Image (cartoon, rainbow, N blue to C red; front, top):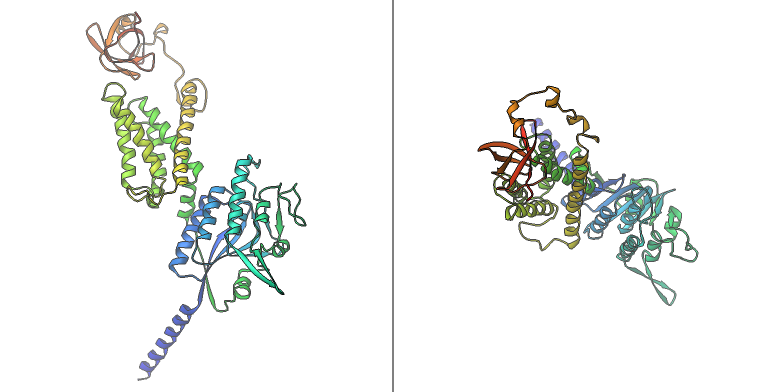
Length: 463
């Protein structure tokens, strides 16, 4: 009887504890304490999703950043503005550049004493200020972000004053040194605010020393649960792999690997590079739901068509052109968040970004191919992989039957296309041959000009 009674008491206790825990308000935290980029954008996406699933009361961004990529800052600020859950930011020292844009998007801003916000002009990788068209876009973006918070109606005696909650002109002054606001900034400097200045100008709701102080004293949650987004190793890897600059490099390796492999029959180092780059490119996109089976299939079919065009189908026509189009389409579509063939939810800027990345990779690949093609075997990064010395017959080196050298000067006809290797018929016999120029059509009269490494080298006869 006593055991039964004790069991009931313990059960009621645990039920009460669990119920009390469930009744606590959930505050969901996300750290943004590195450069704004693909990884931090991933944190925000995953964090907001989990906060919505857990029905959090508030999302609190713990910020300390000197800035980063504008494209990701814009995506984060759009996510914040459209959030159904109120978003609060705690600037724990720095909210510079892209960080300032993100902070302005939040519903409330709190700063640590000694913190700063501002200096949001657009610069390149070396810190040099970008041309005015980039500054103009950033000015409009941060101004629209400030305007999104609307206006407050203030009663002063019998007067009604309508005032911006966050003055758009101050937001613009974060970007443009030509903005002059009397008593705040002249037209020679870009604006950066201290915590005290931000409070005075309406860009900070209060100066605090901790997250707990924000939650208990500013948001008035006395009984709460604080849950913070925990980044995984996969988040870090995925963030790196989906970085636009790295994706451009992967596309370059894919195109370059395919090209160099097609120049020499068999499977070698270029194939390993191309396959590895392809896996690194498509895998995170596939796991994320961006790249679908049919988009990867387009890429593979395009590759097959190009291989068939080179080794099976004479000439360069429909198959080759179709293969190139399918490869580019597969690479582009994998970056776009469409569902099957439904592109209704895809924005124009996403399509433009996808096309820009792919063609940037292609242009870079062409440049690298041109450089390496002229350097391999003489100098450059692959010089140690190429055999520079030749064992000339004149010096007594004979590794193959000597009668082949007697064919030098003979005329024949190509029995396949030479791209640059293929087959020729000389004196009624078929031989492996390599074109001295990059391409010779089937059925072309040729002349043997030299013999090396088991192959005849030929050039077309000019009449």
